[in-house]
Image 1 (spheres, helix red, strand yellow):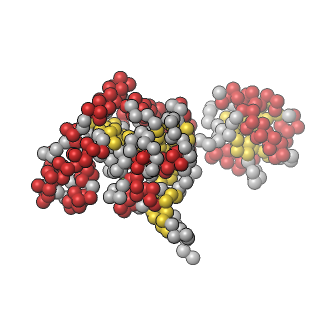
Image 2 (cartoon, rainbow, N blue to C red):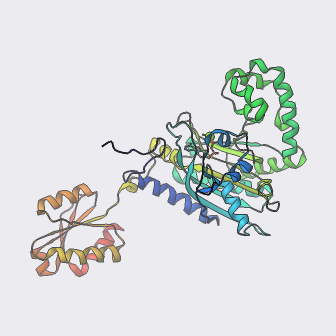
Image 3 (tube, rainbow, N blue to C red):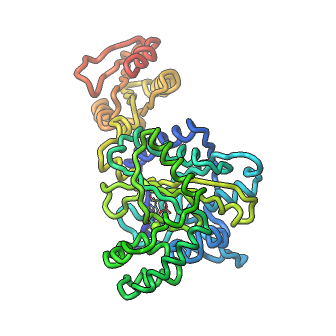
Length: 424
Ligand code: ATP
Ligand code: MG
């Protein structure tokens, strides 16, 4: 019978790779907690309407990437393509936004029906953070500084750059959009097909076109920055000043518009050129109108999301994963001879509890030689050997598997202390 395979673009995370993911997630969560962000977990499925209303009807995500289906009641449901909309829905639904600030983070799978390739999948993992209730640019700065600090902790600062832009208020953007459309219509024939289509649906997205001919048309186009008013301008310049003070470098990219409709004022992306075409590893921005757009009270908000697969790829590519991350065992317990395997249970438990070490106990029997082979292959630094003689004398033999160091016989009662000192 033919074997059933996973769905294209939806990956299994295998044990050989999960330690790097855990390492990455641990660093991110530790940092988010150090800034006072608290975890929120939302369902993976939401009403389709939530994403249409927030992300925007004429965006790539809503037009062609969502996994939408009718459930048995006939309700239209969608596997979440991103986390911000769900997070806003949940925070508002549970009254978290009333007269208070909230710093929230989430992690989990997102679903988009895209063409699978390196760094682009149909189920992928994001870690995101959202802050509600603060309209001033200091929170924009805090979020960007947090991400910059993350790259430092991970050892990839040299390989990512920050692109940043201001989209202004919806009114300012509308005025710009009008002028941009007038200009682009005059040069319609020089635009690529995609941009010609977008001119009628979502003209701002034309700004991040990859087409060379459209790019050259854009050189003469009106600039969004010329349409920003006093409030947007001073917000943006305060943010840049705070980034300067923090020593965070950035490139202002006037064509950075982001693919979702809900952004206002600040938008940013961290990009790398070490991953080929899928170079954006973290992206975010301010969405002051979104809560209201989804039926809540007007509440400023800002957030970012990072693509875990891309960041893990980058860590591997740059070879910056600490060498001990991949090992999953410290101690291997070998028991050979009458009555020794019973003693091995106790020894393993004591070492786990008192030394806080990761212990693999040999199970399934086997000769002394084959057990020692397993110990070597396990990646453990130490084998504990229990033979009949040791059992009789209340001793344990410690064999060092990764060092040129003689094996050592210790009293069972001293074992925890010796191991604790060795692994310290
Ligand atoms: P891209 O321009 O690469 O399509 P995006 O603008 O659609 O990205 P966002 O919606 O901002 O992406 O999502 C935030 C991050 O999630 C991205 O920067 C990226 O790291 C990751 N991401 C987005 N789509 C995918 C995907 N299909 N597969 C893997 N990671 C993804
Ligand atoms: Mg995309």
